[in-house]
Length: 415
Image 1: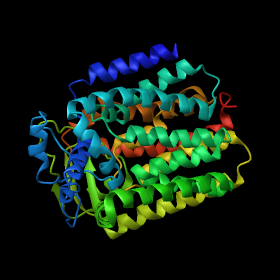
Image 2: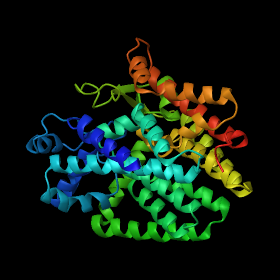
Image 3: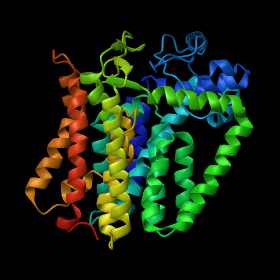
């Protein structure tokens, strides 16, 4: 049955999304091309006070030369390591072939993520049913739909995060540390999840993470050089100082920014024909909003550490603390799109099948319905003077933190 579900998922990714743009993955391909031709100034967007999704000047021409036409492009904001590793691939396969391979791999990774979520929570539900439920929830929300539509590297990052959690529960700390270090080498925020291991005093996982992270950092320096790595860190700092608001940037910075930031400007992608949910605005963060979000993050990390330290049963750790932290870190990150919640969407079925109290199931179901694609598209088209879908999505995901935290005490489904 699981094999059939996997084949269906590959067919969906290959068929339904066959003509969808791979704008997010194209950034990696173009960065690899620039790296391979030694045009290092054409890897990252130009330095600017704020991050507005601008791209290097040569990229539109390169995309057209690759036969992609007027494809909406997004900047490359990953470490130099991955541009360097992508460089040889750009000489071996075309962009279309690169995207086709990624569609198959991403379908497999999303199915694997659902399997890992089942192994993490260990519910009294068959693996095949759980995987079907998890994939359905991913695809009917922008969390999974946009990720597949854009061939987002976040699919790999989320799978690695779930692998780290699953390996940790399986008492395989070395492989858990390696998996989390790999995730952090692509996108930096998984680094924050070591707070759980610190609370649990899982020294082997921490040592594995530290050693693997050091090796990957040295590899990035060896491949990209110090100057290019410093450019990457400068662009990350640029993002941290920017508030970016679209209908699917589900995070507190965007929520506060659209109401508190005094000067908001249209994003570079806002006038593109394919921009629907991704059209938006950007501006400077206010000091109050920035401090508030940081305080929420620090408080959440402290509570996660304390909860992990005091927890005496794995049901609470893996059924409540981990899922809540996964959501909170994305909510407090400076640039979290819907697909940043891929690492937790495959845990969502537990909220619909586990609690004894009908009220908890209803609250979780309403929150999930609020972030479904039909609702998101409907809300985004309402004539209101703010990003209503973004507001509803952020609030709904905040509600789901509470749902996870309440689940273990009334959950007969988790061992």
